Image (tube, rainbow, N blue to C red):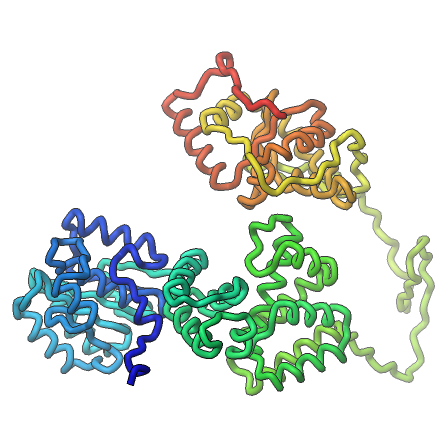
Length: 580
C-alpha cells in the first residue's frame, strides 16, 4: 500500500508561494504589487499555453487574498492556506468549464455568488478552460462578472483566449503567461532532482527541457517517467528510448549523408528509425533546429546565438553542408512540419522529402519536334563568348536599336542608420591590409563601456560628410572575408554600419547584440582599429551599439536638441578609454 501514497512530481513540487514559481516574473510582480497596494480587481483572466502555471497562479492568488497573516501573505501554515493548497477550502471554488459549460450550471453558480464567504475574506471562483463555455453560459455570467458582490473574485484560465467572448475579456484584468524560459526550468528541475536524491546527466536534463516545449508541468511529468524507467538516474539514452528520439550525433550524420547524396545510407537510416519507433515529427523539428543554429553561426560567428549545437558542431555542419543546401533543407523540413498535419503516413512523407532533396531539380521536358519543314533562318552575327542565335526571318529583321546605358545612380542615404552599399568587386580597388594585426578574435573578456553622455558628445561632433564618404568604402572589406587570417576580423567590422563619425571616434551599429558585445571587447579593439584605419586613413576609437541602443540615443539626442540642452561643439572634450 506504500506505492499508493506516491505523488507525481508535478503535484509534489507545485509552487506554494509566488517566490517558488518558475518563470512568469512579470505576472508575479504585478500581482504582488497589486496586493501590497490593495488594488485588487474583481475579475482576472489568465491566458497562455498549457502547463505554464495558470491554475497554480490562481490558487496562489487565492492564498494571498485569504491568508490569516494578512493580505498578500502566503504563510502555508494557517488553515486557509492549507485548505486552499489541498483544494478543500469552502470559499475557493474550482470549476472545470469543460464539463460545466451550460447555462444551468452558470445560473447555479450565480445563485451561490450572493452568499458571503464562510471563513475567508474573499470568495474566489477559479474557472478553468473557460473558453469551452457555451455562448449562452457566457452571457449568463456577463452581468455577474461585471458587477460581482464586493467580496467575490473571479479568476478565469484559458489556453485559447481567442475563443473567449470579447465582452468577457474586456471585464477582466488580463495576464498573458509565456512558455517558461530554459534557464528558469533548468533551475527548477535541478532543485527537484536534488530533493529527490537523483543523479543526472547534463545532456539528459537539456533534452527533458527541450521535450517539454516550455511547459513546467510537462517537464516534471517527463522527468518523473524517466526516473521511474531508469531507477532514479536521469540518463540520455533512457530519455531517447522512452520518447523514440535520436541523439544529436545521429541527426548530424543523417544531414551529412543527405548533403553527400548518399541515398543508401539515408534509406538505411530511415528503415532503422522505423524499427526503433523514432518520432519522425520530432526528428524533423530537431533537424530544423540544427540547420537554424548552423546558419545563425555562419552569418554571425556568435556562439551565444547557438541553442542546440555547440560551436564545434556548428562549424562542422557549415563546412559539410554549406549555406545554400542548408537553406534548401530548411525550406523542405518546414514544409514537412505543415504537411504532416494532413499526411496519412508521416514517415513516408518524410522519406519522399529526403529523396527529393537528393535527386535535385527536375529538368524541364523538351517539346517534341514537328516533322514540318523548318522556316528559313538567317544567322545573326555572334559576339565573342556568346552562343549563336537564330531567328525565323520571312523578312529581314529590323535593325537593332542602340541604347545608351544610363549612368549608375549613387547610393542614397535615407536615414543616418541606413546605408546602401555598392558591392561590385570589379569597381573596387583592393585595400592593403598587410599591416593589420592578424590576431584571433576574442569571444569573451573585459569590454569597453561608454556612457550615453559620451556617445551624445560624439554625435554632436559627428562629421556627416566624412561618414557619407566612408560608406562606399565598406564594400572593400568583402574580399578580406575569405582571408584565412583576417577573415573573421573583416567579417566582424563589415557587419557594423557607420552610425556616427568624428575626429577621434566612430559609432558602429550592429544588428545582433552578440556582434556588438564581441566588437566592444578590449582584446578586439586594436585589430579593429588597424583595419578601419586602412579604410579611413587614421585611427579612431570604435564603439559598437545595437538597434536598441541606437533608438535610445536618438531619443535622448532629439529631446536635448528640442530643449536646447545639447553640449556646444567648442566645449566638448571626449573622455575615451586608452586602448591597451
